Amino acid sequence: MDTVLDAIVTKKIICSSSREILLNYLGNLSRTMSAEQLKTEFKCEDSFLLHCIKVVTHGYIRRALANINSMIDDKTALHSIEHYKSLFSYCKAEAANIQIRRRYQEMYLGKPLFSNELSRSLDEFVKIVVKALGFCPYKFEEVRPALSAI
Image (tube, rainbow, N blue to C red; front, side, top):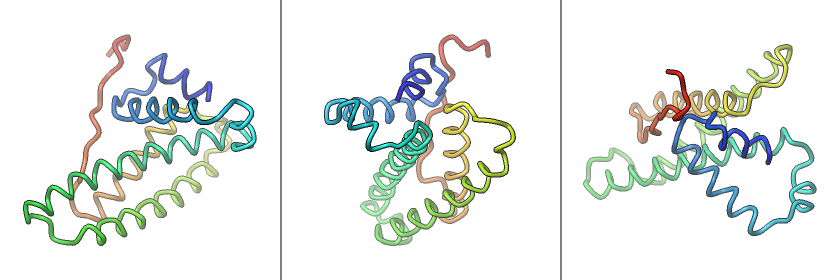
């Protein structure tokens, strides 16, 4: 949890939506679980970091489905919400497979920064979503941190 909090506090996660999702998740988690429960729930830090990436992915899916629901209400959507949900499930599984292969192939580079892994994983997932749906259902706002030199 410290790695995720450090990435948020030091503004290494440049996507404000990802930061917001993680802050909400960690706040809810700290209210419901003790440090000991967290240690038994997540066997190692890496499993918690991968879990946090999944949390952000689910946050993206929730927001994208809300946009698609409004398209369905406006009668501009081509498919039912159930069809889109199944497409997101497919995209999530496909992205997980790609990420596992990528992490395995890049093991020689050492452990990546959480913020980089989060950004790459989410980018890979969104690319698969756009390919499957034919459009981008939701775009996270990319914001540079205040301390950024760029």
